[in-house]
Image (cartoon, rainbow, N blue to C red; front, side, top):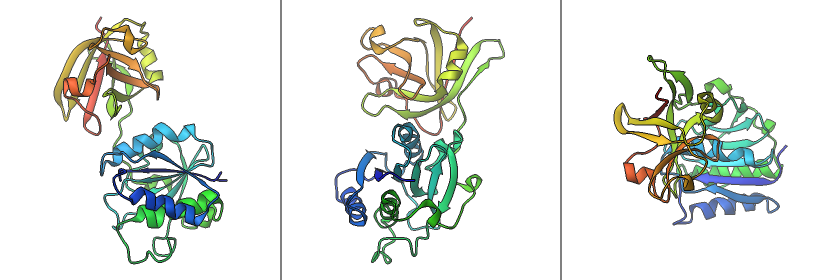
Length: 286
């Protein structure tokens, strides 16, 4: 069951009326729901980033919350519009274009239903094909959140295995050919305001290194196999455990391995980034 909470995520920004239109449609469907924002600052067209932000956030909302996620460079094309139900009882209304990839890679999607874009949409919007965030996703998200329709009312099922997935390689612990303990993974996202890099190496894999605060690891960052960063960094509890301007390894708020800079931007200082194609390794030198 849903709980009258609707959470919006887009790459629309807040410079024009797009998000306001989505809110207006949602409240026009039901004025007893609560519409909140996840973010509208997803990098335009960056489906991978939208996928991560959903994964980062959804579980902090109560089961029954409905999310609308619109990062949709293929709007109006043959890609499907879907509603996914998570194993925790959350719902996500979104295009089937990879937005659910991080949830899928963590085995969190329970079942999926398809929205009929020709009939299950804002009345009067039939001739519009470029604003499905308003006409399809906000509209159906509000109907679902308010309880006017149920998940089962969307009768066409889509097997979870058939959802579009972006390639995500899990972060893991391993040993090098020389027997050195090593963590390898991808850099999923940048901490937007502060320039830290968040990897997809989870805490349980990191703990296999048996590190203490102050221990060091050799960190290498590559983009499309080009080595862009290669330094030895300390693993610390928090940023102030090093001097201002110094780099560090820490565990971020989503419990993965991260790289940061005390009162500075790791991303800008070292000219590195995040997303598909960015890989990281952390090696214990013995």
